[in-house]
Length: 126
Image (cartoon, rainbow, N blue to C red; front, side, top):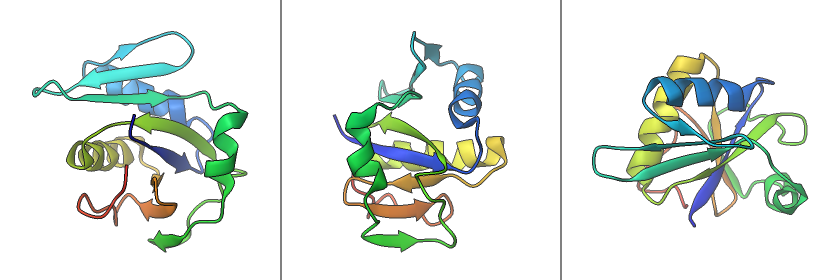
């Protein structure tokens, strides 16, 4: 599955994301998982619990940074996000950042850190 990390300085990142998605019609599963399907049937899934298997990818120094002042993943909150469509990812990142009221960063599959304002659907790698 294609995916990225969401990273934020807010300590309640998953809870805030889950709240926004549930209000938009998502379904919450057990163990901090929430999923929403768009009008074209495309899925966007967020996992709030990360085990040690994610640490190597999350804690690697980024290859590049698009935006200013990214959080340090070692001290920030992070979620794993599965999504196959860059345009869907970008639209949710923008909506979540707005509704949460806190900057949201994306660490993509190529190790590039993107601020919510700089995220580019043509360049982000899932």
